[in-house]
Image (cartoon, rainbow, N blue to C red; front, top):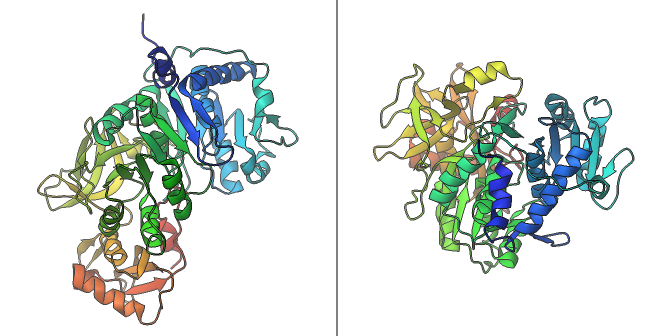
Amino acid sequence: MLDNKNAAIWFVDRHVEEGRGSNVAFREADGQRRSQTYAELAERSDLLAGAFESAGLRREERVACLILDQLEYPEIFWGALKAGVVPVALNTLLATSVYQATLNDSRAACLIVSLELWETVEPALVENKDLRKVIVIGEKTPPKAISYVDFLLPAKTKKAIFALDDECAFWLYSSGSTGQPKGVRHVHSALLSTAETYGAQVLGIKKNDVIFSAAKIFFAYGMGNALTFPMSVGATTILFSGRPTPDAVLDIIQAEQPTLFCGVPTLYGAIVALLENREMPSHRVRLCISAGEALPADIGRRWQDLFKNEILDGVGSTEMLHIFLSNREGEVNYGTSGIAVPGYELRCVNEGGNQIQPGEVGEMLVKGGSSADGYWNQRAKNQATFEGEWTRTGDKYEIMGDGTYIYCGRTDDMFKVSGIWLSPFEVEQTLISHPKVLEAAVVAQVDDHGLEKPKAFVVLNSNISKNNIENELRDFVKERIGKWKYPRWIEIVDDLPKTATGKIQRFKLRSSK
């Protein structure tokens, strides 16, 4: 008889069986400031499984989850896995047109949405022929929708159905940093794989840890931080439904006293800049992690000087579910992405598909147990991304002599200047290290001779004069990394286009020239 590999059993029910049912699993930092133990979560997710069955949702049908980071999210996610329906985590910060396209693409039979997001998603439902149930979490229930409370009323608790390791458990949609988001399918075993590799062997999470992730649950990185890793050991997650502004994050760090903090480079940079004019919060943070984009070295060092803890900069992807390349505690080398996470294999190849040597730049491929089962209805993209056990990341890296990796940019962001490959990220890191610069993005622009040269889009720190700043920044780059790498054009902007996960959308900057 095969064992039941339904991930909800290991991440939720196991804690009750092993005596950790009274541990607090989730605690809200806003709203009603509710909390939920592992025993309560087990019971509520059983109830959700029964509610899905009562609503006539069939195994493998999709349930779109447009939900803020609140207590209902984990009980819905694990309840869906217990019922055999497939939760589809949707970005909570998108436009109506994107929701319409995503709901149509996924063919979700059910939508569960937080009331605060209803106004945005409602127009996307008008012509949808797949949705049979629309459930709203909140104090009011719009017409033609069902309240979350009423959805649960007729339900009887239902234990987790039998599932295989390789059975599809949930979907994520890619962040769309290079275009339209794609549905990425993940299996039950992928969740356990990330917990046993990065969660246990790099993050080193313990049952007495309290974790706060500014990255939201809909983001693969945030799902690991807020669900997978703390729930692998019976730890506590702080949930915050609001926008993680620098002020809000610092307030939560002081009020909730997390021991682990998970952010993205743009947020770390903004917090460091804010602390020039704000008092340091009292805190218990022992370790931080960063992903989404490479962390500029200057930001990492400035954070560590302020908080007296390290940021483990790492690399992950929606396709691999979480981080597979990372720095290690006590061995952080800011400006690098570290080494492979235990359980993953990496290789970097040139345009001919051959392994590169130290000092060269190539595209990274990764192999590991958390690899996606593929994209939904994207045959050509599947063939281009998934090569047997290997997954193409689309990221360019340089391998150092000591085996560490340095991020050089997306494959489609790299370009040659004077016949030599230029890493936009190297120029961006240098610009960000200037005391007057908050953020920077570099793309290729064609000059009057038809040759590609770097152009920089720069966001200045507050109260900085623009007078002669372009020449000052050009000279700064020339002195730091070489005369041929400096940006020929510099445009001062108020902000940079980003995905909801904090990745800079350079394709929009290229198209705006």
